[in-house]
Amino acid sequence: MLQFLLRERKTAIDGLKGFKKQPLTPKLFGVMAEYTTKSKLAHLNPWRKTGSPTAGFPIEFLLAFDIFPIHPEAYACYAGSAGVTRRPIEEAESQGYSRDLCSYMKTSIGATDMGWPCDFGGVPQPDFYVSANAVCDTHIKWFENEARRHGVPYFGLDIPSHVAGRGDDQDLEREIDYVVAQFFDLIAFLEKQSGKKFSEEKFMRVIGKSQEACALYHEILAYRRCLPAGQYFEFQRLFMLPVAVMWNLDGCIAYYRRVLAELRRRYGDTPPTDLGSREKYRLMWEGITIWYKVDLYYWLAEKGARFVYEQYTDSFGIRRRRTTTFPETLRQIASEIITLPYTLNLEKRIAWMEQKIDEYDIDGVVLHANLSCRPAAAAQQDVKNAIQKSKGIPVLILSADMDDPRSYSDEQVRTRCESFIEMMEARKG
Image 1 (tube, rainbow, N blue to C red):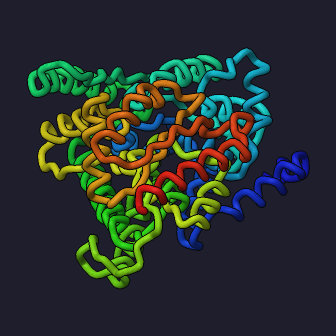
Image 2 (image 1 turned 30 degrees about the horizontal axis):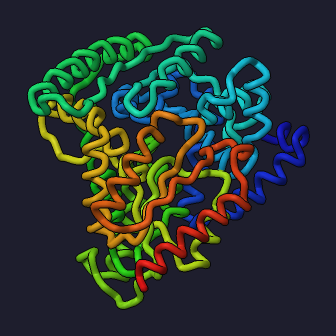
């Protein structure tokens, strides 16, 4: 880190300014800083293996083998929050990666190749890579290629897409069977990499902790239905990282318990409490956040518009039901990966959003047309038309990029958002 600060003084200063803009509480900052510190020092513990998983991968399998998860996408989010992703992205593109490809991937590859620390997007070299294509097909080729470049092993989970127009229950059971069979291949892979035998008992202890962490997370999420909401998107997108990365489930549980206790003290034990000070405009965000532009959320807040629900942050509390036996748990994990809210098919996606619009008393929806994550932005015009027809609220399709600032124009975005606010105001009138 010291070498980076001396070599990249301007980048470091710009990054620290970017970090300071984030609405981090001291405790959450400490949780995140602890993860980056342990990631940097992981190589000093040769007896403990490290693995890099993708979003949507069941990290509990790694934890059951005492494997430390080094998460490239989390570091890319850090770099985005710091506002320092342009150079790493251009470095990756100079190697032949297309501008249309995932900006998380290019941030990670570029920052790593330039020797940047994980606070700024670099990835400490893991012992192996594991991926699942549940959230994004890019994950498979990204991690497969990184494993090849660095000469380390790779394992990929193939997660089927539960598309519309099929016999839901019967087909879902077959898809679960397919994924569960791969879990046993994954266990064999991890036994080989770690040199340890798999313990069902230890795995179930880890699962119990992850299910508790996710239950706490969703209980906290429910307080965003309050008037005013317990938390807003600019904070929630960072608040989800402890449960998304799962590097320290005990610490995650302890932190979320403290936050939940404070929310109960402020709002009471029943989340949907009307305190009589409703936000002027309550918004839903659909898609990945714009990491480098927290200023957008602050600017909208000044206009009285606050994001109180996102499928994106909801999806990361992936363990949604308690299980007690090993076979039941494997099937439940497979089901949760396949039916993740963030990857629902079009029909179920619209129905989910309509339900949440009612639950969270939403005045308007912003759909992020993410230029480097095209599958996530597919069929947004259909979503817009359906929501406007069924709920009668304004829907804005906002073209940008999650981690690449070159695809963002302050003037254009603010002009479109002002028109969007005018539509919500006219509807209220």
